[in-house]
Length: 330
Image (cartoon, rainbow, N blue to C red; front, side, top):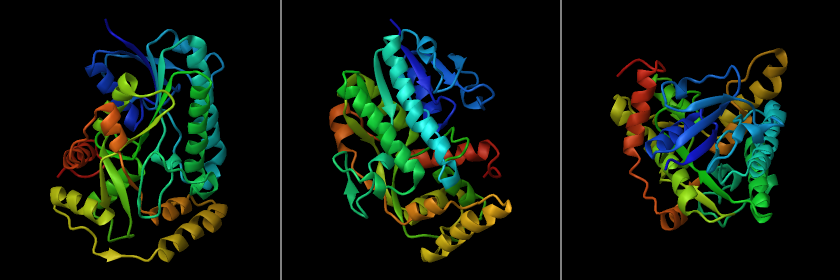
């Protein structure tokens, strides 16, 4: 008998891949989407799209009786001016989705958090036991994900069946916005990246992230968080892998942090007041100064997942961006 899922964030990057994984596993899917939102990531899929918002007061009725709620939706911005929108969507929206799932009598909720909520260990590898203090998390986005995750853990402590997954940095197809990492791919593929900062991050195949959500539903422990990650890589190493597929050399120039910080500060604090839209978020530059390395062995052990080498996901991302007009086909 087919299991049923209610999905938020299905029009986004992780959610679009999760929708496909659910359908491939035989689930019936109803996906929430804001009226007027870009729904191209769900076009042609055999699922039901329902209009609504995370903060709808009657969301329980929209959810209905389902086996699972997969709450992937989140607002992403590194600009400080978007603080209110981040809190409204990520914190208040998560609180409302959890309450609505509980009121609807839905089964297990899998909440998509982020390693942003965990924080970093300043060049060392962090796992689920690490937690940076919220005041040490850089930017409103990271803090909003921290407080949103607290909503999930509080709900689990009160008896709701909630499992938390914390993806690292996914890459792959359907990155339509694109994400900050997707923007790096696109800029590099267009030949617009002549220099980089010295940083590192954990890269994971977005399809493995989607499968990790299904494994969390099947095997995760209520109230636990699971890092869904892949390989810890220096940014230079990542770009060299992208370059091997596109014929472009990775940048050889490493710029000191003060340079992009100065540009971002000028754009966000000065030029924005003159009506110019910032192109480089100050908090994004600050985040790039931290190597974000993570250990995903808990998910491998408890959820039984085995992330694939990242090269296939890099290849899929390069192909998807080229096929969808972000760069000239290579």
